[in-house]
Amino acid sequence: MTVYAIAQLKMTDRAAYDRYQAKFFDVFRKFNGRLLAADESPRVLEGTWPCDKLVMMSFPDEASFQAFSDAPDYLEISRDRKAGAQATVLLVKGFNPGG
Image (cartoon, rainbow, N blue to C red; front, side, top):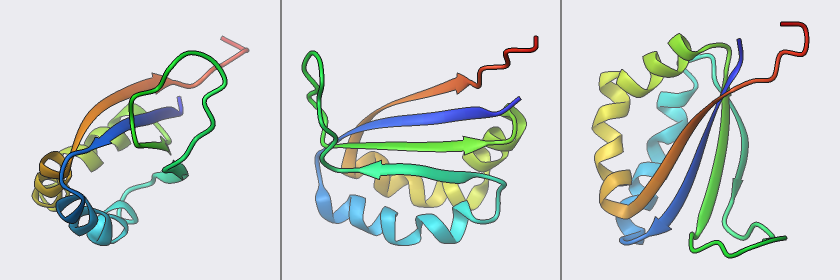
């Protein structure tokens, strides 16, 4: 079942985050993920949103996401993401109307 990773980011060190972002696709493309959205100015329709960026990715299944997030290459670059932004990351199961 498709899963979606949704990250809400509040920048703390833009230079560190930019280093992460520059290397992200080299790692991401090795796994069966799709980048669906990366928006630094989403329109807030209801409530408040204290973050600076939203990122949405999809993976064919949870194992594919786990392979990406546990990969040594990703763990290495994620140091800059963690140094550059506070994040809330959600893993959401896709909707399967048939069961």
